[in-house]
Image (cartoon, rainbow, N blue to C red; front, side):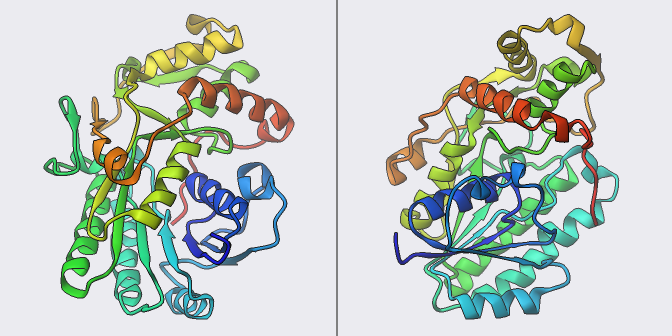
Length: 330
């Protein structure tokens, strides 16, 4: 991989920053692009390692597409990997046009530029299982789409355009859909770090819908490995699920966090109503990634919880001053 060049869009995101770190560890050169300035080093795993092959540009897909294309043409990446998105589900009901602006319109404009990049071997797009809506049992990549929130609809529209561009222009796109990603470095408003912070600071965690939603959690290290395999070995025009066989309710996840921290679930949690459009379950069949890419998760949700506890404890003084709720940026 010593000569590989990666353009990572959304490099400040949890998965994006973790992906950058892994590619740098394997000798690649990386150009990272995100709309916001780099946050504190605590949220950027590529700052936790020694390297000299990464450069960063603060550019917004909605406003700086010409500059993004100029950077790509200058860097000439072998692989473009996109993690950028308005990613929150519940909040997408509040101002859905912002989700469609970023997740659909800006992406379509990017796709129309990228289809002309002859130097690009693969365009990897991080999609979401939310496009399937509420499901019963395991779903594979051929399952019908039934998005139930503005976020999910905006991502589904983007996916459809990518697949249409693949058929029409030969855009070498590969889509990944990962289960619920977790691990150290994650945004503090996500369920695992938020629960940990609530316990450490004596605040109550509001558990929407009583935590009865069923999910599969996957360690970010495994998602990064699966994304790398999709870039190197994925078949253009195909979709790959990145997940594990482990499923659990959100309530059971919070119980495990309490167990590891020696905290009382009843003392730390208060029940709340479910959010609008909340899917009861989406469980992914990842056979295709296993058989075609050799993908096999090696980390557990217990690992992710333990590592996230240690990460938050190291940075607790700083994290106390940060919001634990999502702050929307247009």
